[in-house]
Length: 508
Image (cartoon, rainbow, N blue to C red; front, side, top):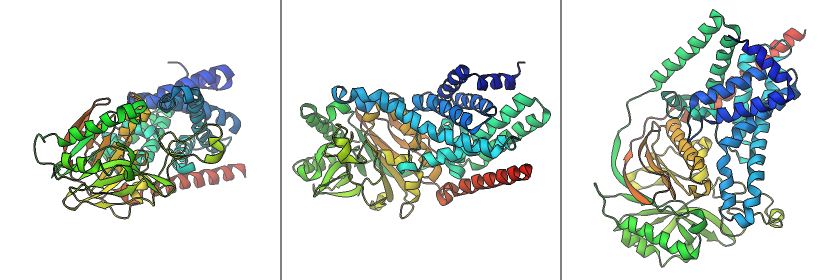
């Protein structure tokens, strides 16, 4: 068997080898994300990264190594980011490679920071390396979820979605799954390098604990309520969605899907996706009676833009059986550069405007999370597109809802990895909070997801149609819903304090 540790040392010391090996390792680790979802690839790529990090003999080298691994990882994971720039390729296509590499390089800086801090805390004696590297990486991921409004997309813990390990997110969240995954990688590395019985016992012990915890957290699959919802998926390509030559046909398609006879039980609610009507709410009063007629007396929730003076909102409106409509929710967690432009006046001089907004420089943010009371359907927390990526937005809701609703326009993300990764995020929100989530997407994937994160029924990506689903039941409030990432923050702080104490003792 080759000396793996010696190989890692040679790679870490060789400028060309480490660049190639770390970027390739990052690419391999990214294969754990949708649509590939090869969780073993994520562990393998991170294992290579850890083995090389152990031979980063200075903070500067550790930062470089972490950045290179992250560059490979995020370039693949965020590859869907080029799609918005090709909606209008003549105007924005030239920006696509710069946006992707800029985003990947920027996110990788946080991994570099985590590697630097872990290297410094380990000290020359390299104490607690197996604990400090996972702690540094996890702290970087938590920071990524909050810095500049946050972007916790594509975290390593998401790779577990189609395994029973994913259910642990109801206790520790996705960030906690990332930490456990990294600990497992480090113990595996210790066994590979040392090939001792002690290393084998440590690795086997953690694996057994994870298996036991997964068994304990598993419960009976949740049942269903008696309520039936219709999810409308018009499949309007983004380059045609706002085009006057096509927009009317997409609205007509949604009216036809709304008016179709239900296959089973009578409908209780019909839901259209984000910005499903390509105009302001104030300008479509003529359309609302047609929506009500098509719904045959059933309420319709639809995504639409609205104006309030000079401010514009990405909203969700309720169309009542009498044809009246009123906004019930304004999106509050907006996408930087997608829905609003930081320093908008300066950016506009260079032709840079918010992609998802059709008006001005972008949207205004709503006041915050809102729980809607839908009577017999219970209470629902609406999430518009990007908001389903943030568990903290759900925890900040004024009360615990009975279910979650995500309306989104994933046409922006293309037809490959982006929409599928977005679906995985929604599934993890269901697990973390023990709540079913109904997902209605313009181009897909529309789905009914139970409180265990399992997709019960779905409409494929890129297909126009409608889906009648039974609303799943909620589970009791989860540990993660109650405490969020606070226990993980405290654990990471304890690891840092222990490392500082150890470093100081050895320095003396």
